[in-house]
Length: 132
Ligand SMILES: [Zn+2]
Image (cartoon, rainbow, N blue to C red; front, side, top):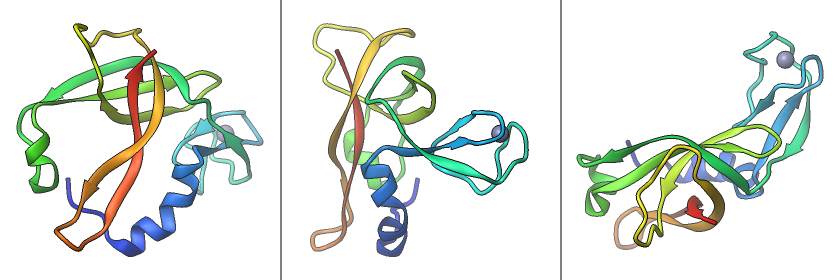
């Protein structure tokens, strides 16, 4: 995984901060992040869809070898979270206390610091999943 540029963060993060996805006006598919074309039906018209911060773990993996931006955090758990009301999000699963990660575990998304790009660099924020 590479460190995102400041330009990319500026462009993409407002919608990510607000957990804003898109709902396809033709078929109802929920997309996050948003796309120009619906992968389910090919339509191009969407409404803003506010995602739930609650969901369940759909699948997960434990990362033991990571790119330079995340090498100080290994091992960590990367989970795909299926959100209530639609949409999925891939993020770190953290704050497990005497628990093992498992498929179906109810989680809540919390806004956290994700990484820092060098001593004076960009600090990236995003969502992490924690048990609820
Ligand atoms: Zn669609």
